[in-house]
Image (cartoon, rainbow, N blue to C red):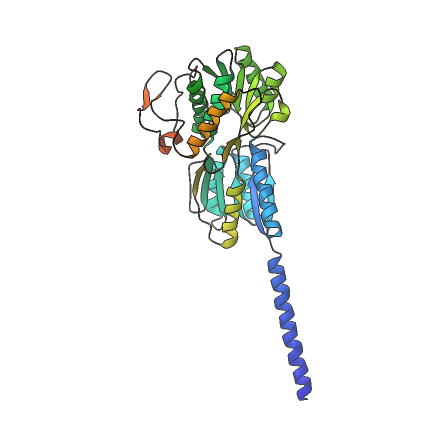
Length: 362
């Protein structure tokens, strides 16, 4: 009798242990879901491609600890809200919304999912569960502008721009100031396409700029169309977001590239550790979030050396792309000599600097 009771007790303990083991195994196998929302197709170059490299870095680092889902080609506005909401409702513990126009949809969804961590790229509004992150693209733009200014023969530069928001205006102005630093005779022409990703319109804008005499063109749009157009026309181009040399082996002088891998892995690690809090990240050359791709062999050694020194000086805080005096295109002083434009002013930039032609759309 006692033996039967002992056997029963042992069986009970073994059963309980088995259940605990099964629960632990199930728990260990339950990955943390992470969502990404992309404004344009992933492709093999461009803004979304660079963010997708960050997604892949997450999967490589964390393996089966996480489960990542992305949705690309999402228009800004109501459709973005729907996609962000679906990712949150599907159990995502962190959602990355990777375009400026996703800001308000992200904030709206975040209110309904207070236990989900949201990060929005390039925006300026935060909440208890919404952080923001951005890169100091203008630092890379200044360096690329130096190359463009040194390589132009017509002294006319061209820029295919997306939307007239501070981030894009910073890039136009920094590029112009970098060009003027090596060539005081340049003029910058801008064509606005009012889209992040529209290869047809981007190409048309690039061709229009080249028809106006621009022999070095750049862009603040997502596709490879501008670089490809420059290649076809025998002109130079400075790519944006990522290296696009495969679309313009002769045209591309360099590319202003963005790197999100470390930010994404750091943020997901915080979620896994249970200590994530909304932040405000704005990293540049120093932090490795912005860099130049390989500089073309067409660029003379002395100009390369100037760019390399400027890169070092920006990283060390010795050079600021908007160090005073900063004048607008009408000659009005925006930043006095001896001062640098602060982050608040940068984030609200709404004017063209001297050297940019045309009127800034409002």
